Image (cartoon, rainbow, N blue to C red; front, top):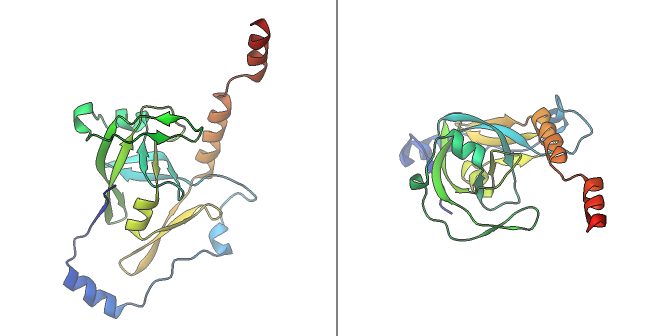
Length: 194
């Protein structure tokens, strides 16, 4: 996995800037919950600018070590197989199934003025989400995420910036997931007829 942080400033300017500014603390308080629907247990689903496009239904997953792109985004960006680099390692899905990736592609993710280039693993499986961003993106950005507060916070030019989750979108994804599950009654009747 290769992740690169791009910056318009050179090292000398950054070191001068760092001497003048106090270190930022990225944290969360009860005030960060204002505007969220409480109580809840929603996933952190955000909109990000990926490859020059605003992409909705992006899951922030601190537990994942790979950024993943699903067919909706792959097709929406008009990517072709020849755009992909080889990626030979199989992945294990949430359901425990082995998934063979189609390949890998490096794309920029823009947050504010900051651009982080990320290697997405492209899979051809159905997902509620268009993409998953994971620890490599969070760590390169210097970000922390918290599902309780439905936010991602990161430092940028001496300030703490934030990306706010979309609980409504997260809940819509859950409804879609439930509607795509096989009907238990029809499975049971099919088993009886065998």
